[in-house]
Amino acid sequence: AQKVTQAQTEISVVEKEDVTLDCVYETRDTTYYLFWYKQPPSGELVFLIRRNSFDEQNEISGRYSWNFQKSTSSFNFTITASQVVDSAVYFCALSEAAQGAQKLVFGQGTRLTINP
Amino acid sequence: EAEVAQSPRYKITEKSQAVAFWCDPISGHATLYWYRQILGQGPELLVQFQDESVVDDSQLPKDRFSAERLKGVDSTLKIQPAELGDSAMYLCASSLYRGSNNEQYFGPGTRLTVT
Image (cartoon, rainbow over the protein chains, first blue to last red):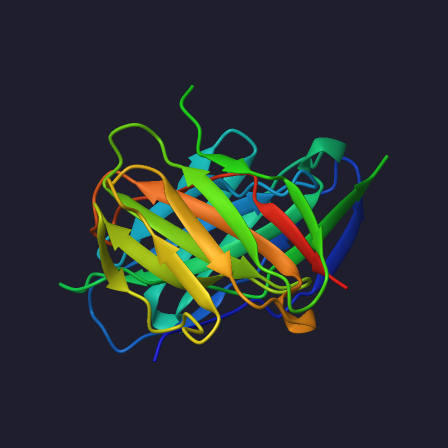
């Protein structure tokens, strides 16, 4: 069965520090997709990135970067030069490329607090 | 920018009462999802629709929960009777296609409190 583990329940850093959110996943499929979502206090989940299992290239988008390593089943997320607006709960999620219904399995989330 | 709409945003109800939530997905999105998110946890899928058909409702407590998407557009999730343990955020999401590579777009959610 699919499983996503975000071992860090809460992280608190001072503004401008770099911070990495860890995500480890379990799946028996060779084809799957990984996602990161941000949930600000308003409650709406905001899509950040999608990565398929065949693409291990790291990705950078502004201050955000993602490190995908199949060998360790990890898909970590780094925020560089953090800002107060980055404060939110971040979820890592896994979806398998099945013929049937798509089921997005979420981790427990990491609450990130950026202090001024 | 197109958004998923949900109403109400907040709902307080007494246990044993009926409650209903409404979701209007992004126009043209064929797939619609209902999730339940208990405080401090990640969302869990309750039911998935492809157009008007249920694709997956394996995690839906069918003795008290029901969901419909009659015309393949907006959807309603109902709980009857509500129990204390149903207190949670109920999130609706939609995606253009059913494939697992498609990102899901989420609405603002309905926060339910059962007293």
